[in-house]
Image (cartoon, rainbow, N blue to C red):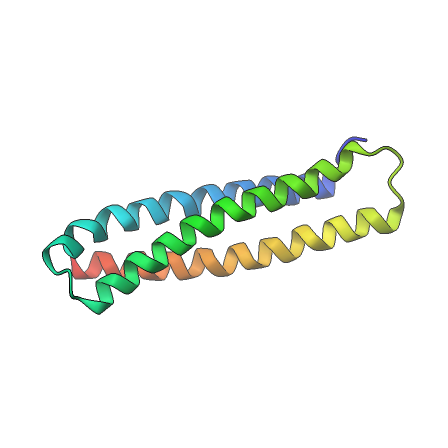
Length: 115
């Protein structure tokens, strides 16, 4: 079965947002590592490092979740309620992704202000 257009829009948006978060998390890690090397006992820098690492891990897990959800379309003749459930799952995932995106952007901005 092909992916319905409305669900494809969700999948594409998730992919885009996850890619952005991944890039920002990598940028954050690249900014915080040298600072953490100089000030290895700094709790705030350690928290930044942990937060960017968690965001990166979140991206990897979310990509897998989306892929598993998309793979459900390999079954033919999915009932309407299953399609609705898939759409709800992806919408919920998008909500989580947008929350993490906001957190990473805030942390990255704070870190850039420190530099």
